Length: 476
Image (cartoon, rainbow, N blue to C red; front, side, top):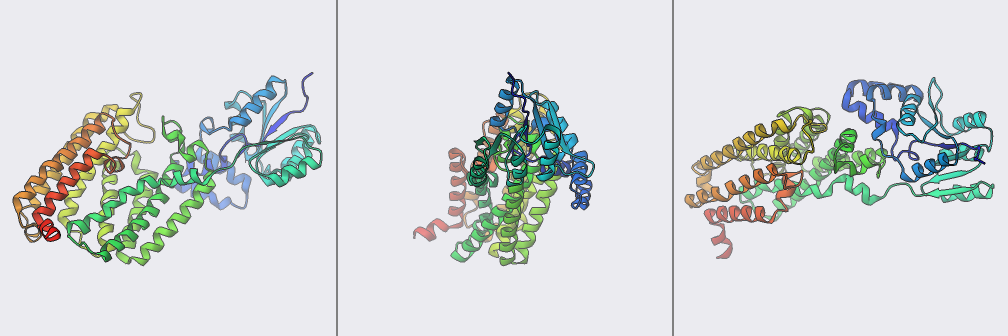
């Protein structure tokens, strides 16, 4: 005989490894930031807020990560002839869409019409519909306790030992399933491996031959500040890209897209990282703070809109890389010359094109890249732009070797001309590897781990130090 008790599942953090309210908010920021922020005026009216954000954001519930253990539980209940119900404080329309997207769900309940279906309100609604102790309920938070009290069987997702013990003492059959998040996954969201890109802050010090501990110490503080700023933007970028990442072959495994780390945790990490970046920025002076501020604002604009715009995104990436060079100069007090910035910008334009070439080379179809403005049809144009960047960088470097500033810093000019060869080989190598999809999605991170490329860069620096007479000075 089939068990007559329905299995009622909470949604946010239970059936789903995410929260539909926050999914709606970030989807809305990506689609219509002004309307989304305007909806926050309904913070005091939670059902209306949820409905507004769901309408604006229109998140794709079918892509949201599902808890495999709860899905298995729902499958088993259906096999036993039991009804499976979703009951959530999220917007009722979204909950219905979620129920329709998963064949194991028979019915759904959600917040609507001024009713926030949460905690005691949900408990009363379920008891009225099915009867007290006439349903089993799965939840994941202490606010679910009133519902568990009125249920028969209890499923607890996550680590709530006190509630589990108390419910067992009251005679409820209790099943405990794993849940929650870990700091190791949260650290992945910070993308600490990307911090290596911030060695670009050392470029002005190296170019000016300012090899002293004070300059290096200030640059190191700048790197910490820029790393925190970058992490804050990576978090925002991932939260805005949830749907695009879930459609991507590898990015779907990112902490927020996969549900390994809650969106709320990501928002808290963003605030913490931003605080560190601005605090250290203020310590390093108004110039550095302004540079960090511009970097953050441009990065936010990039995340919200610019990365979807063909060509604009490549030049935006180049600007963000160049701002790191400017930051190194403002942190250390070393002048970042116009010539240096004019040289590094086309290099970074090339690397921006390489980033997109890599993605296109790894694409599985001719459609536009998720969340980007490029498709395979743009491959040739990107190659041409990368070539323009390579030629531009080499020409500017060659012109620099005959400038007055170069004459002051470098004693033997012909050695500088020799340095053009490894620079050219490195740039051509990066473009070739990107065009074949043989590198990471971030060319700067790849470049700083690529032994052959690092060898070419080391040869370039050695030649420049030789030209400047530094080897003779250091080695006597």
